[in-house]
Length: 247
Image 1 (spheres, one colour):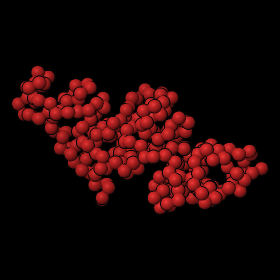
Image 2 (cartoon, rainbow, N blue to C red):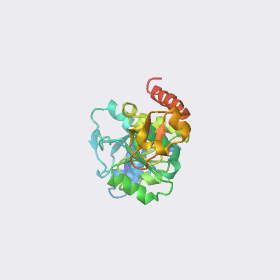
Image 3 (tube, rainbow, N blue to C red):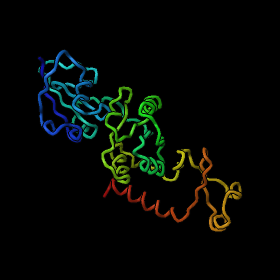
Image 4 (cartoon, one colour):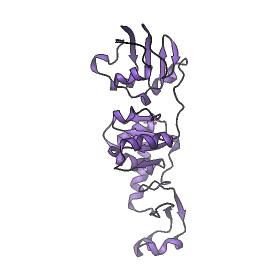
């Protein structure tokens, strides 16, 4: 029987059983499994892992674990501290697909201008396929979904509160500079552009026509937006979100 020692760093410990958290542990195994398979056997989904060191050398997921190996597994938050680690994947573009548990988070991401696909009836297989084929980051509350082999970019959303989830995602993917509020439709994810009032006047109520002159319209579904009572609340919310970066 072979054996190897493992240490999972910082926030990867959230996925481990209590007896393995924040400590080095020894694992016995037969043959020579890939380190990716072994990592996931401990409960850690592979998209959460961004660096692996075995016996002091950086390796990728295809590495076959050997007897007496010493393995250190790192999340993205730890990579900047260790120059010798080669990242397992490049940072993806901030384009997302979300599972059915994250509808409010999807609306928040769209409000901040991020390309975000969401339906409350996506099957797991389709979510994984969309993430893979369209190179989208899969955000989910389902750890098992992240373990699907075709998923490359993904993140298990820790918090249950939608506003905290948004802050968590912005921090995890360093998106504060990429915020473009009011540039995307919160209903269909289409791009929103300024539109001349006269071209949409027939679609507006009399009160809206009298009180507002600036409008934006979704290029996909046609939904019209203006600076109503909700606008100031959104401006305040966005200011609060941005303040998280420099509290």
